[in-house]
Structure formats: C-alpha cells, structure tokens
Length: 196
Ligand SMILES: C[S@@+](CC[C@H](N)C(=O)[O-])C[C@H]1O[C@@H](n2cnc3c(N)ncnc32)[C@H](O)[C@@H]1O
Image 1 (cartoon, rainbow, N blue to C red):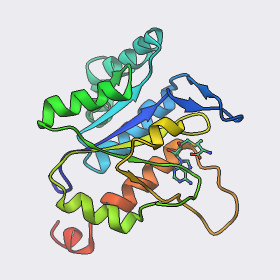
Image 2: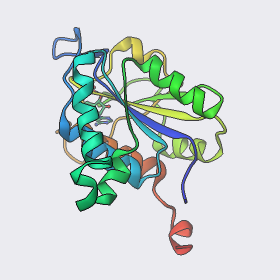
Image 3: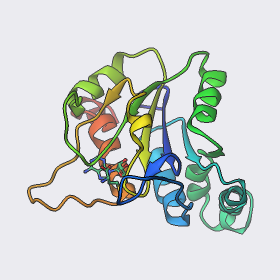
C-alpha cells in the first residue's frame, strides 16, 4: 500500500464545547461514521476511532460496522465494508491512545484541528513532511459540536492551522474538514501518482 504508516484519526464527542464554550458531550451520527471511514480508507489511515463516553451510543456504531462488514451491506457494497472495518468505538481519547500504543508499541503524537486561527499553529506542509519521516504513530483529533475542548487542545504535540477558503464563511462540517485535512497531509505526490 502507498502512503504513510501509523496514522489514525479520532472523532471526539467528548470533551467538546457548545456555542457558549461549555464542555458538552455530543451524539454519534451515522453519517460521520460512514463518511469519515471512507476518507480514512482512501488516505491509508490505520484506524478511525469514534470517541464517546456514552456507552448507550456504542451499539449504534457496532450496528453500522456489523451491517457493512458482515451483514447484508457487505454483499452489496464490499468496498464500503473495507472502509467501515477501520472504525473502532471507544470511551475516551485515552482509550484510543492506549489502543494505538498496544498496536504500534508506542503512544501516538497528538495532532489537533480547529476552525480557529491562533498562535503556534503548524502548517499542513510542515506536518505532511513530518508524517513522512516520523517513526511514532500519529493520532489526528477532530471535534464535534463547536470543537475540541481546550483541555484536549492543550495536550497536542501539534495544532494544525485552520482550513480557510477564499471567503470569510468558515463553517465546514467535520466530515468535510477531515477529508480536506487528510488530502493536505497525505495526498499522493505527483511522483507517487506517476508510479501507479
Ligand atoms: C463544526 S466544527 C467546530 C468548529 C469550531 N468553531 C472550531 O473552532 O473548531 C467540528 C470540527 O471540524 C473540524 N473543522 C471544522 N472546520 C475546520 C477548519 N476550518 N479547519 C480545521 N478544522 C476544522 C475541527 O476538527 C472541528 O473541531
């Protein structure tokens, strides 16, 4: 497989903030599970963690995974199952970190994302280069609601700059933000494409 080894992503449902900046837990949505899994598979990620402390929501994710990986969905759209197989549901970001450490032998670097600009942000070019040479695994963290809580952002080894279009409208869905981020960090270079 082409691509960079040891890159994972997580969609965080807690701790995230609401419009007022208060810490909240958001609900898991079917579309986020599907669409982010497809982006993760396209860009060669090793896993996609759906982080929710609400155990009652975990069966929702398990049902989606079962349907596409072993149920009726697999027979009709096997490639969808291949993407959904990357999905793992866990209770916390620390559980995702522990799962990566168990698989890779060391804990991942944490790379966080936000729509907000601020000091100390890393460029996509710098982070893309780092991913190509980094021996440690990397966990890319994406928020729900109005974004990752400050206590998650403070833990990061790198804080990516926001994706900004040519307008002042900056309200991407997290699914779109994940796809753009993965493309900026992991897209095949021209020389890779020539090698196909
Ligand atoms: C609905 S957005 C939250 C927007 C929030 N105001 C913020 O500052 O991140 C949910 C998630 O999508 C991602 N996201 C959305 N827009 C983004 C952007 N312009 N640049 C980078 N990430 C973005 C981030 O992971 C964010 O936590």
